[in-house]
Image (tube, rainbow, N blue to C red; front, side):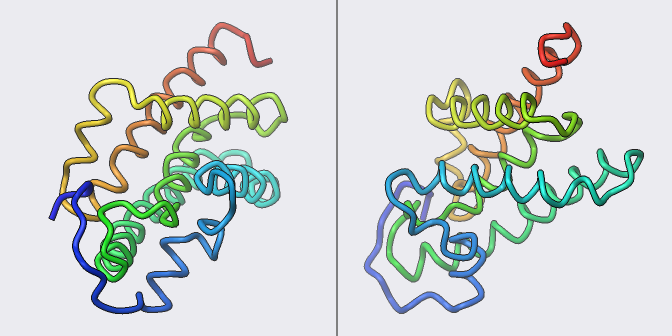
Length: 168
C-alpha cells in the first residue's frame, strides 16, 4: 500500500500509535491540524531549547528531528492501516519532524522561530519538486518523507537568510 491508497479500517489504532502519530492529539485540531502541530513544535522547542547548552543545541535539534522521524514512521504506518487511510489528516508527527528539521541551527529568537514556521508550512503545503513523489513511498515512509523534505528545504532557506543577515 502506498501513502495515497486506502483500504478498509481493520481496527482501532493502538494507543501508542495514536499518541505518536497525532502528536498527543494535536492532529485532531481544526482547521489545519498540520499547522497546529507545527505551531506546537515551535512553542515546545522555544520552551525546551533554552535549557540546552549553546554548544549542544545544534546536535540536540538534529537528534530530536531524527528521533521523531524514526518513531513517526512505524506510528504513522500502524495508525493509517488501522483507520484505512493512506495519509490520514490526523497524522501530524510528520509535521513535527519537518518543523524540527527547519529549526536546526537557527538561533532562538522570535524572528527565526516564526521564519522557520512559515518556511516549513509553505514548503509542506506547496510540495515543490520532488517532494510530491515522496508521498508515493509505502505507508509511514511516504507519510513522513515529504515533510522531512519540506523541512530540509526550509532549513536550507533559513541558513541562507541567516548567512545574508536577514534574520539577525
